[in-house]
Image (cartoon, rainbow, N blue to C red):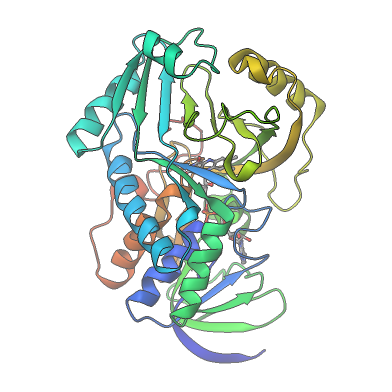
Length: 385
Ligand SMILES: Cc1cc2nc3c(=O)[nH]c(=O)nc-3n(C[C@H](O)[C@H](O)[C@H](O)COP(=O)(O)OP(=O)(O)OC[C@H]3O[C@@H](n4cnc5c(N)ncnc54)[C@H](O)[C@@H]3O)c2cc1C
């Protein structure tokens, strides 16, 4: 077994959480090793699709509104510095809900308190502005003009590229659970290599339960999530930005984006699918998933009733019991950190996660209780959306 250089921090997992953790640590002058079993933002990872929503609204969960505000600033700074400005698409984000929707009401209050720009649309304004949407069941809409979409897998690649420019070393390797007690000195890979570091961050997304089965096997719930891209009619601009913003139908538990990069209208349902293994789950959509989404899209977006499905993605959420992130020390290995639990809403927060982890590792910053391992139950009761 070869043991070489000793790093300050080894980060396992180059999804959005690991990539930003490595980048922030490198900016603070640390010697960082970043490892991933498959590659940054690869097709099986949770960060691997084309796009992810960045919105400020989070109901009453103000911490995530503030984190999204901070993260958008950091994403834009990164993209500007690396000549990647198109990786943030300022489409605006439109929330649509039925009368009396409590999340929408709380969102309005928190956005106002946090100084986030937004506008409210009544049913009539909605129908006038967005005639391509069937407004059945929708009474109110809330529009965030400065939010939008991040071009996800390319944004992860840009984050890793910047981290490497600042001296982070990157390896393709699968890391084994160290399974030791106390402070550990190194990690080993499936290929038998060994890497020494002072601290170890396991940002393994939906693999966290497989990597640490005893601690997280029943605390991280990876669920199958399916996303469709519908081809828009030829010459039709109604499904492109700015005619159509990024959207969340709270009433239907659906979300999607306009025709970004001409890939079609993206749409997904936010309900949790079946529990899956991220290494082996089928990435092919099923006939019943197709039928369900076709019916829905034909109803909500009548002009797309006969539109072809031009692309699909099958991914997984890496849910915690509540939907709150997990960022805490391993209970037995004092210099091993568990980072993940993005729970279907984590992507936008990558930069804030990186800053939080740097605070924990370098500044002994006060930990946030809702990110603790102790707060993660073994039964799912989703509370954060
Ligand atoms: C369909 C879908 C829609 C979503 N929509 C949104 C959205 O609109 N907005 C939003 O903000 N978020 C959204 N999310 C959530 C967001 O994408 C995730 O929370 C986020 O990408 C999680 O990133 P991660 O780095 O924790 O995990 P991942 O991206 O999965 O990265 C984990 C990495 O760890 C590596 N790894 C694991 N184990 C090992 C090991 N032992 N050794 C080496 N490497 C290892 C993996 O290869 C992988 O690359 C969505 C998720 C899905 C699936």
